[in-house]
Amino acid sequence: IRDPIKRFLSAYSNRVGHHQELSKEFVKQRSPILYYFVPHFNPNLNQFIRYYKLYRKVRAIHHHTKPISSFLGGHDLSFFSDVYKIEELAKFEHELSGIYSQEVRLPRKQTGGKKLTLKSLNKRQIKYLLKLYDQDYKLLKDHYTKEMVWDEWKSLTNN
Image (cartoon, rainbow, N blue to C red; front, side):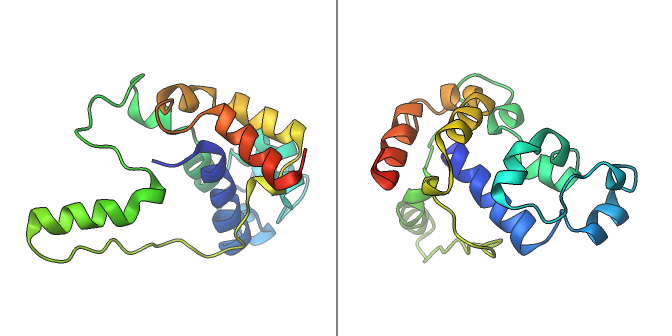
């Protein structure tokens, strides 16, 4: 699992920045009707958040920014025997290696794009994203909380 806002930032960086899935060419080819309504092609982060409801109509953007709770359909993680945070990937690999009696490495894919942190966001944007991912924070409450987001943001921005 991953912090929902950090997942959003990663999706923006990878899908918009690296893969350019909001470029004129991509939108015109994949979403020709939407092409005429896009306010900014290759939007910066501020533009992306401001017009997110429109940009998420692009299938790839929708898929990568859709709340994780909507994929799981439930209100808890009890379906899973174990849950690992993305920050614990090495621990997960180690435990799988023990189970299979051989080294297990999970390669990271889709890592292209500028690495963004909570510092990239302003207070209004944090509030917006916390609201957008409210169900995710409820689902992941034992691992990630809104308070953790605020604390980290404040420590990065000195607010």
